[in-house]
Length: 177
Image 1: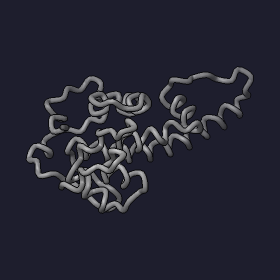
Image 2: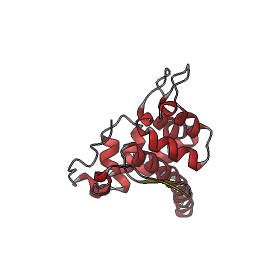
Image 3: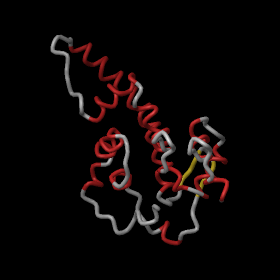
Image 4: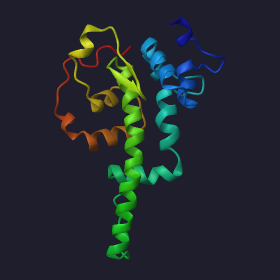
């Protein structure tokens, strides 16, 4: 336990490096089980594991436009584009949306762990010895609303889980420290 929360001179715990350098699933699962709260702790540069997971990817110029298109922030249409050109753009956007969904599923898994919900990394599963973890309902929109995160995470949660806007939490996120 103690080694999972120890930080180096940059203020980074082992989980940060396991995410950054894509460590084996079993290593990530064990670190998340022992110290899930490390997900939100910032290093001396203000970067957390969550930011390393998403922001480093979402802030790349090639994904900014895609995220804006998917979330509806950028709905511009080329007035001079032909119908076939618009169809090609939509097909390209759908392909990119699949890549975004892959990143989203990875983020979802880490957030589940951070909030003490059962999670899975690769073929390795992680659970907590919390009797309430099985009776709680996971709502990613509620989770991202309760933390500081990249704006695109919140917009995607609304787009892909609009039903959660009207759902009420009954202490489902209570175990986050």
